[in-house]
Image (cartoon, rainbow, N blue to C red; front, side):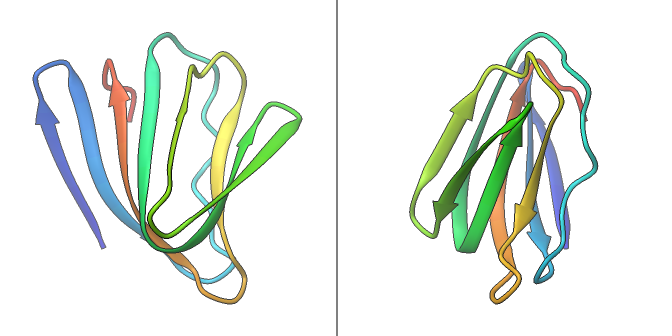
Length: 88
């Protein structure tokens, strides 16, 4: 389930990733990205680095490298993802 909304100069989506699922890799672009994990756990892949986050945690990065999010193979994940300016 994806729920999208445009708020000012930001794009906000609520998305669910199936266990082992991921978003499509996004090319570098200007702006900022922020997310909050509603359930499950994820890995944020930014360039060659990876960062983990779980329910109740948040993430922030400037998208200067190719990036995407993958969900835990056991739990999947639900998250709110904000991009400013909108890029998805």
